[in-house]
Length: 135
Image (cartoon, rainbow, N blue to C red; front, top):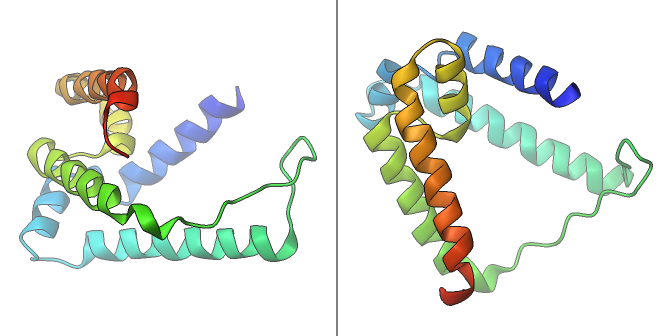
C-alpha cells in the first residue's frame, strides 16, 4: 500500500511540475527553456543532499537497518556514458523517461503503453544478456 501511495504522490508531482509534458521535453531538447533543466537540477541537488545526510547522520531504513551507500567506482565510466546515451536517445524519441511513462499512462495517455512495454521488454532483454555483455 505504501508503494502505491508513494508512486501516486510521485506521479502527482511529475504531472503538476509539467515534466511529463511532451512540449516541455521538446523545449528542453531545443534549449528553448530552462524549465526542465531547473527541475532536473533540483532533483540532482535533492539527491545529493539526501545522500550526504544518509552518510553523515548514518541514517537507518524503516526496519532499523543501516543504509549503506557504496562509493562510486570511477573505473566503469564507459558504461555510464553508453547507458546514458541510450537512455537519452530513448527519452528524445519517445518524449518520456521511465517515471513519467507511468504518470502519463495513469493520466489517461494510453499511447504511452507502447514505450512503457518497450522499456520493460528492453530491461528484460538486458537482464537475460547481462552476463554476456562486457562490464
